[in-house]
Amino acid sequence: MRRSLPALLLVVLTAAAAGRADELAVYRASGAEPGLFDQYDNDGYSLAVARARDGALELSVRVSASALASRAPYPPSPRPARDATLPPAPDRDAWAAALAGDAKLEAEAVERILEGLAESVRYDADRARRQDPASVFASRRAHCVGFAELAVDLLRRVGLTARTVQGVLRTGSDAEGYDSHIGGVYHRWIEVYYADRGFVFSDPSASINGVDARYIPFGRRELERPRGLTLTSVETSGRLDYPVLRLPQATLRVRPLLK
Image (cartoon, rainbow, N blue to C red; front, side, top):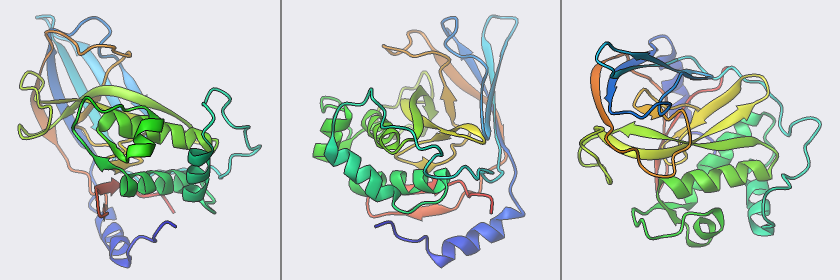
C-alpha cells in the first residue's frame, strides 16, 4: 500500500511555492546528425533548436516551475480495455492495479505506480542484465532502460498511455556511464499522457511528473549511440524547487499537483 507523503513534505511544498522560478539551460551541440534534436514540447518542458552560423546547434531548454494542473479522472472514462499489444502477465497486471489502488486522478495513479516501482526495484549498472519488463519485474534490478520499460508496461496495464524517451542527461563526471563528450550520460526516461494536459515527463528512477533542464530528448528513436556528438553547456539559470521524497532505495523529486 502506498504511504502518504510526510506532513513535512507538504510544508516544504507550501513554503517553496512563492519562490519558484523556471529553470533555463542553453547547450551547444556539434556533430549532431540531422534530426537528432528537434523542437520538443510537452506540459512543463520545452526544447528549442536553432542552427548557428558554424553549423552547430543551439539547444534551449525551459522547464516550468509551475505545478501540474491536471484533473483528469482515474480510471479514465470510459475505461479503456487492457492494451491488447501487451503480453499476458497476470502478476504485473495485479501489481499495477494494486499500486494505483483507489486513486481518483490520473496524476495520483502515476505517482503511486512510479513510487511503488522505485521502492521495489534497485538500480544496477550491469549492462549485460536483461532490461525487458518481465526480467526487471522478476529480478527487481535495472538500469535506466529497465526502469523506463517496466514503468511504461505497468502504466499501460491500468489504462494509462505512456512511452519511453531517449536522450542525454547532463551529470557529474562520477556518474555511471559518463561520457565527457556530452558532459553526461545517454539516458532513457518516460512520458505519460494526461487527457487534459497532454504528455508529461517522468524519470522512474529519479522524478515524478517532471524533469529538470539537464534532460535533453532526442527527436527520434536511436538504436545506437550517436557518433561524433559533442554537447557543451553555454548557460543555465533558475532552479526547480520540487519536493523530495526519500525512499529506502531511491530519492525522487515530485512535481506537485495543483490543488
